[in-house]
Length: 268
Ligand SMILES: *[C@@H]1O[C@H](CO)[C@@H](O)[C@H](O)[C@H]1NC(C)=O
Ligand SMILES: *[C@@H]1O[C@H](CO)[C@@H](O)[C@H](O)[C@H]1NC(C)=O
Ligand SMILES: *[C@@H]1O[C@H](CO)[C@@H](O)[C@H](O)[C@H]1NC(C)=O
Ligand SMILES: *[C@@H]1O[C@H](CO)[C@@H](O)[C@H](O)[C@H]1NC(C)=O
Ligand SMILES: *[C@@H]1O[C@H](CO)[C@@H](O)[C@H](O)[C@H]1NC(C)=O
Ligand SMILES: *[C@@H]1O[C@H](CO)[C@@H](O)[C@H](O)[C@H]1NC(C)=O
Picture 1 (spheres, rainbow, N blue to C red):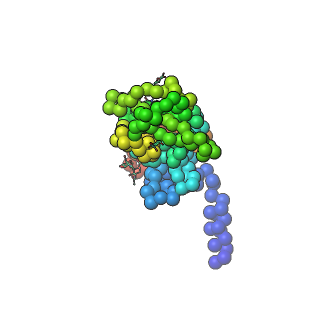
Picture 2 (picture 1 turned 180 degrees about the vertical axis):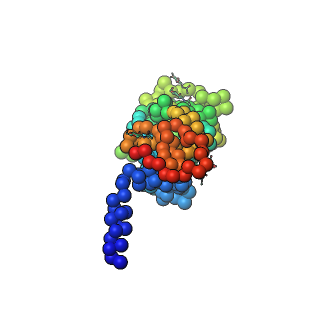
Picture 3 (picture 1 turned 90 degrees about the vertical axis):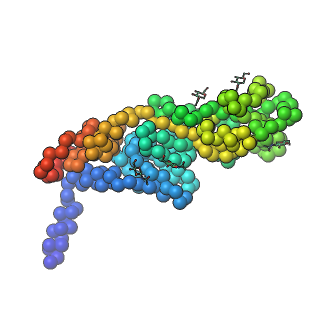
C-alpha cells in the first residue's frame, strides 16, 4: 500500500516540468480573471493585460495591472503612474485611466510634467480633449472669478494662489489668461466630463479619467482567438507572442481542427 502511494508521489514529483508548463499555462489563461482590489467592482484582466493572480504569460510584457492601496494601477514605460478605472475588450481595446498625481489634489499635480504615455502602444480615444490647467496666476483675475477658477495653496498651506482651466472646444471658451500664470499643464479629459467642467467640478471631471485605445498589434490576438486560441506569451521568452491552442502553442494562429487527433503533443 505504502509502496504504491510512494510510487505515485514520485511520479507526480518527477513529471517533466515542460509538460506541466504548457498545461498550466493553458489552464491559467483560459478562464476569465476578475482581479480583486479593495472595491466591489472587479477589473476584468485579459490579454494584453496581466497582474494579480494572472501571470505574465497570459498577457504581454509591460502591461501589468497592479493593485496598490486598493487602487488598480498601470505603470507605463514613460514612468507615469495611472489609475485604471476600466478596461473594455471590444475592438478596439480601451483603457480608461486617470493621472494619479492629479487625483484628489490637482493643485500639486500642476507642478508635474505633462502626461505622456507610449504612443506606439496607445492613442487617445476619440472622446478625449485637452484641458489646459493653469496655476499661480499673478495678475488680478479675481474680478473674473467664474466656475473655471481654482484656488490652491502652497505646500506649506500658507500662500494662496489662483488658477483656472480652459478647454479648447467652442462650448467652453474663456479668455486666455495663461500669460499671467507661472504654471500650466495639459490634461486629457473625456467629453463626458464637459458638464462637470461647466459647473466647476474639476475634481469630478479628472476622476472620470480618459480613454486610450490599444493600437500595438491589436489584430494579432484577434486572429488567434478567431481560430479558437487564447493569447499569451512564451513562458521561456516573454517578449514573444504565442497563440495557446488545444495541444500546443503556435506563433500566430491555431491549425484547423483535425477530428480524432486529440493526443497531447508537447513541443517544448
Ligand atoms: C466599463 O466598461 C464596460 C465595457 O465597455 C462597460 O459596460 C461599463 O459600463 C464600464 N464601467 C464604467 C464604470 O465605466
Ligand atoms: C472579461 O473579458 C473577457 C474577454 O473579453 C470576456 O470574454 C468576459 O466576458 C469578460 N467578463 C466580464 C465579467 O465582463
Ligand atoms: C493635447 O496636447 C498635447 C500637447 O500639445 C498633444 O500632444 C496631444 O495630442 C493633445 N491631446 C489631444 C487628445 O488632443
Ligand atoms: C476661490 O477663492 C475666491 C476668493 O476667495 C472665492 O470667491 C471662490 O469661490 C473660490 N473658488 C473655489 C473654487 O474655491
Ligand atoms: C493661451 O495662450 C498661450 C500664449 O499666450 C498659448 O501658448 C496657449 O496655448 C493658449 N491656451 C489656450 C487654452 O488657448
Ligand atoms: C518559446 O521560446 C523558446 C525559446 O526562445 C523557443 O525555443 C520556442 O520555440 C518558443 N515557442 C513557441 C511556441 O514559439
